[in-house]
Image (tube, rainbow, N blue to C red; front, side, top):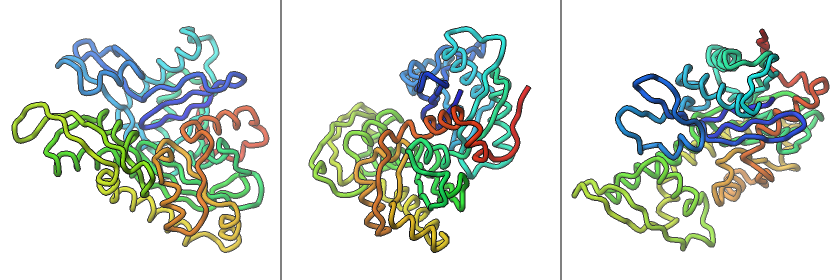
Length: 335
């Protein structure tokens, strides 16, 4: 079983079956008896809409486990769901994609959560490698490949060759920070308080990273007006949202540039030939590939299915375990 344990979404791949589960990484818990009421999509619908005794949590922040017990509950639920409600006598072998910049303690927390959730053998794979394998890049060959994986909590920039990371940079600025910047902008400029889900909708419908033909799209946003304290509707356009996201986007661009500056010349030549590959949910932001091309002068492609790259990569590693065993970093944990 391959798992992309993401800040925003968790995807599960089962050998021979493909991607069997794609759910938001959200858990709704009843505060009275500490039991989970809902997990995944059902829990996401509850974000910002719960009564006092129910709390909807995202157990992962910036790509790492922020709430260990809730993350374990979520993993248990997803593993059971994939097994059709049966926990089974033998726990599955699990490959989990994690950000390359996490510490040893954060790495151990992910392993422990998976073991507690019923895994028999846990291996960790760095997300840039998994995303590159999932995007179909030839990571086993002695050629330079550059991948930029923009998730919910972290952006991973890496140069890969011969099943390994030559150099990488992980910045804790990604989809969540883009949504936050939209929330702050709406509050500062329009005096409108909006929730997490509304910011996400704005990002999907009107946001872009570079001027596009769709800049004329307008959207009505509903929220709470700060001055009157009453619900209010405001009309927004694409260019103002692009302006509001300029700061987090510049952090991502700088990380790409810094990685390119440190790349050995032979590999840099390969990257100029092959281009930069974008993966992760953030790659779906309109015009982001154009912006990176414009800033670096290197052709930038978006992976065919950017959201699923990491989980497809973990699945391919599982199915070709012997050939790709070198991609695992550090020790494995097993019962």
